[in-house]
Length: 216
Image (tube, rainbow, N blue to C red):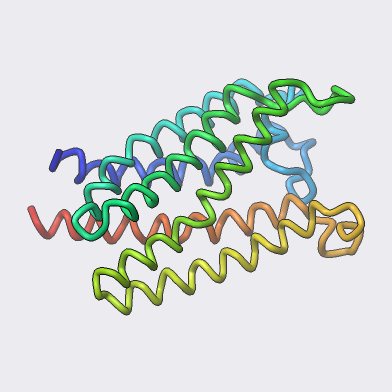
């Protein structure tokens, strides 16, 4: 379990970078997709030339997140088992709901009505993104319980920042509002929002890798 705890954070870091790079790498092969106005899930649409690559990449990224869960739990279980489970669950929900489900249940914008695949994709993405969003909140609670005020404050601020950009991204999805010049760029705001969701995960993974390296 010690080796799993040590290498689990490498899986977490690889999951983040794999997930983050997806639209930019695949965008090279899909120049017709306007990344400023298109959400990332459209890479997996039935008409996309990079559909298969996107679906496989999403599943691989999700599996990397899932492989990190034992390490996350082991790191915090002695502080609070319920919070350790919640923190691991937040990453697991994103890895499964927003990555693996995206790869298995792709969207089809050519269908006038929701298909089963689109329904599962959207529900899974919603649950997954919620986990993605609240991850730094659980870190704030864990470090506060541990008596580490500097770490707890850092993740609280990171959570506030991610909530702010998630709120803007949410506004871009409202038809009555997203006609405004800046809010019409739904793809841009999705990517900015995700960037600030990735940031606390990357910082946490790097901190744990450094701590584990010092301990060996």
